[in-house]
Length: 582
Image (tube, rainbow, N blue to C red):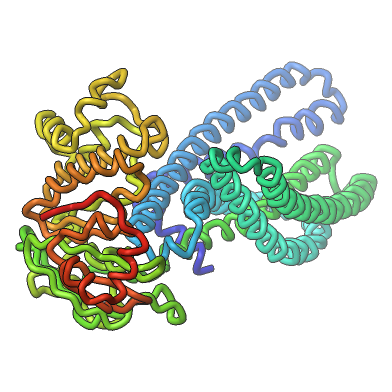
């Protein structure tokens, strides 16, 4: 029941529209209950009465009455369905938007532990459960319940004995619904998990199609996909078998009740206790009684299936964010750029410690290189500055203020980031450059591109700044994507700059050209630059060396080489002929 109460919360803004729909639904149900009566009058007052032929002129009238009832019911039903579907779609929009917004706000620790395709599946498909619950659940329960009550009242008035006989199978039907409902929920959850796995495999394989072709792994990828698709097929077949079997059980019980009513009802007609027209009307109402019961059966199963999807959505919304703004968090509108790490520990999980006791102070406008072997914790250290993660011990400060005392949005407004693989959206060059400052003017965007030495190649593109870059920037070379990322950082003009392996994917010639641009970008900004290519940062203000999460050395490049320690070893093994000088 709690899951259904949570779903109803999304419909509170639409109480007025829902009330209107329910009123129209009641009117439609009332007309539906009148449908058998015109034919009853024709049978009892015209066809089976002596001299009924004299009343044959009434037959067209009652036929027209039946058509009028059907037309009125149809119009009311159409209006009701439109209102309810519209309400369901609006609630779906609310849930999808809330779910997507919350996923955007959750820390990277949450996303690191899950496939992005699973989150996408929950937003796109699992969220549809909220509409199913309303349009195929709550509204069906209301209309079926009212129809049952109305039909039962009319049947009792016609023949209470036949009514009780017809209801004899209802307890068995209710038990069957309950029996199959739990199984259907479990199987629905299994289907959604298998479908999510199919989507994940397809997304991963297609997004890496260049790598697949390069290594000739097409057949292996197809086998992997077929395996997940087979599991989905099996789950769907189990669900279908349960549906077919349960439908057979329910329909057989209903036919048994109908057969018993036909037998006893025929005896009542022969005994003169019931007219033929009344038996025909009673039979029609029996169908009306069983039809809502059958509808409630499918509704119960639809609700159980939808509950599985809704539960997956609420699992996300119930997730506690690891990085949240405190109630007293302050806005930061400007910063000198002084950064400090004070006894910082961090681990992605309790048994996966990445940083241990890091103490580091960075002065405003200072350029600091962060180096170390693979897995030393370099990128993790950078990720703590914009609060992608919070340290498990110690604190990180800007201008002597704990980052946890600042709002994430205002903090990140003070930070520019250039990554190893620049992330571009499948939109225009202009929008990608202005992503951090969507209100930037045309002149500011062009100036940023010029400073990043990207203006020339952008203007050679078919539509210039209006050219689309393709999915993840696929229409551009690695160097071009990197220059757009640098232009984005120039445009944002933040006082703190984080560079995470900005040239590691480039050839030496392109790297040298990009580094000239980065040198200008770093000027006057507090900069942390992570790189494996030590010669790239050898001439910066200070270099810190991480080893297995611990800060083991710091100083200028020449000082560290003179010490003959960890940095000297790394430098000798990986020196390259490019460099960044202050």
